[in-house]
Length: 207
Image 1 (cartoon, one colour):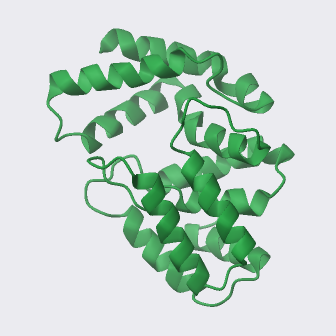
Image 2 (spheres, helix red, strand yellow):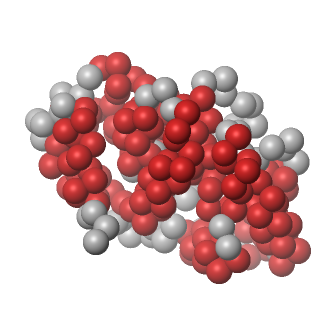
């Protein structure tokens, strides 16, 4: 039987030696991810990214920090804002400090969260590449999973008029396709580069 979210969270807390307020931090985190208006950026997305980390994290320098950053990278999410990653990093810094997580880990986690803004520039650090690939792995899934992801994103942007949404979504997908590589790790490219490009091209045709 798969471990529950709380069991995975507590296991990470043990490895990080962060017992103070750790359970309470999870409650706050879970409430954030359950907020009204979320359809894709939920704990289901976090669990998928954690699964991907088990495949893509073999070359990680600080595996536990990446895992923690995955838990927290979308803890603040509002589709009408453009600074969700910074707000998530700030939220994480505040609550991890309260839980007495190591300052070095907190700083690393904040940096990893900020890199999920998916800037066109390629980070030199392998751990930052890994979390980017985990976050984008949904693009390289089978048709049914990818299409559900697209539907969930549309629901999160339900406040955007259809014509404008198609235009902006198309620009975003095209920007991914224009990159030399969507995925930045060797394992990520091997697993997902080809199917991701096929999914994005198909989605663009539908738009």
